[in-house]
Image (cartoon, rainbow, N blue to C red; front, top):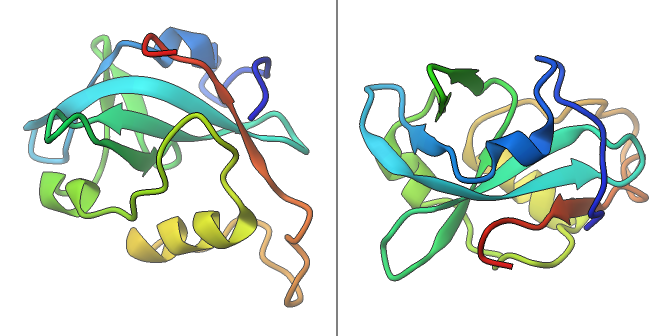
Length: 132
């Protein structure tokens, strides 16, 4: 993961997401943003690792279509879906295969998906969070 990066499309620096509380679509607290993951090729923030509090596990949530509102990260998924996300651990790169599993878990289209294998060079870096 990269320790530097650009800003989100909303104009928010991804480092400002660290420590924000994350809520599901029904307003229930999921946890706290621990790390932000950037696409190594573009520098665009794509994933946040949210510490759920369940055995100190971090769950990855997509930053698109999530939004920052009222000083919190609002995730448009049910808390149970977030907590059931594949566990890849934090502090390492996300591989293209891991990212694909996350997109499938959330039922999202893979951005920029072209011909098979076109995303092979995509890896995801992180902006270290409070736990690092």
